[in-house]
Amino acid sequence: MSHTSKLDIKVKNVDTLATVCGKLGIVCTTGAHKLRLYDREHDVVASVTLPGWHYPVGVQANGDVIYDHFRSAPGTMKNLAKLTNEYTLSETERTARKARKRCTRAVRKGKPGWKWVAVYV
Image (cartoon, rainbow, N blue to C red; front, side, top):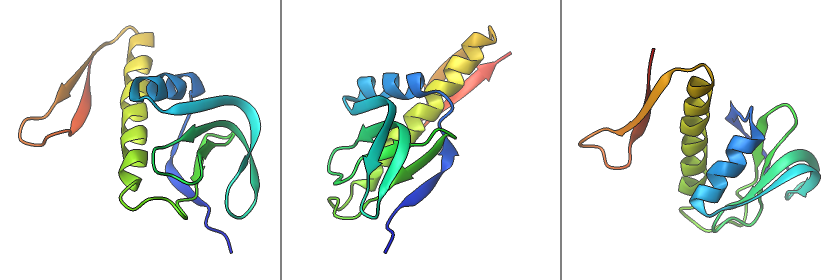
């Protein structure tokens, strides 16, 4: 029985993912390697070890994010949400700066922890 799931997000820049993991204090392994999840091994270009997770999260060569939350501690899906949110924000900022656009990150008042990136042209 397969427990492997795929996120509706593409990781287009493994270097950004590694930087985000460093900021969050999360272990990220980059470079092509095999990742063992519950059901089988997967070929990945990066894997991330999240706190409280039994299996690492993997990034395949096409950018797909795969994971298996089986045997992980309750309430730890928030760690995956935090990682994907921070990656999305950081990659948006990187892309904007590469295009020489001013980019500002702000926290919306009234919603603690809810962040968005405003890109000004």
